[in-house]
Length: 167
Image (cartoon, rainbow, N blue to C red; front, side):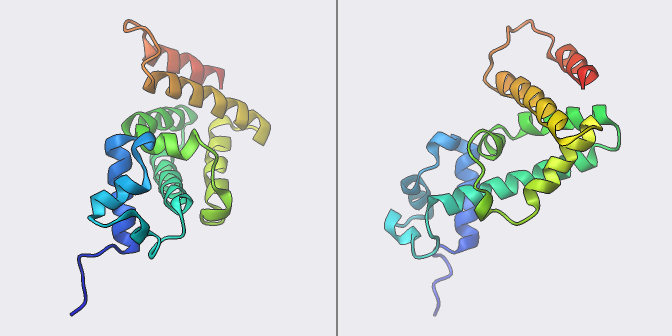
């Protein structure tokens, strides 16, 4: 009878996502992942190539979920920009692995990054270079907010309102 309790790619993906959400990027190690799956770390390599495969899978998931959140926000640029913030704050660890470390472009599905880039361009209504500047503004605000770098009495809703007006 086949062992249905052992690791599969799907179980590894699910466990890596759970681990990321619980411990953040710093806690996502092959050893921690193997422990979660009740196997020895070297056994993971029977199912995946390397840790970058795990990271790329999580980045792809992040890009997909982010894209869905922006599309669901509606047509207004303001709603899309606020959806960026909302998704990032609701998924800080997935956000971090998706946008704060180098994107493993050669290992994520073709066209996925471009699709999300086009959503940022839609927020700006302008060209690619302007979209990069807007993304840097939104990313910086989200990063600082997630890190707790603003004073407790800071009105971040007003800050975002002003940032969106600048877009």
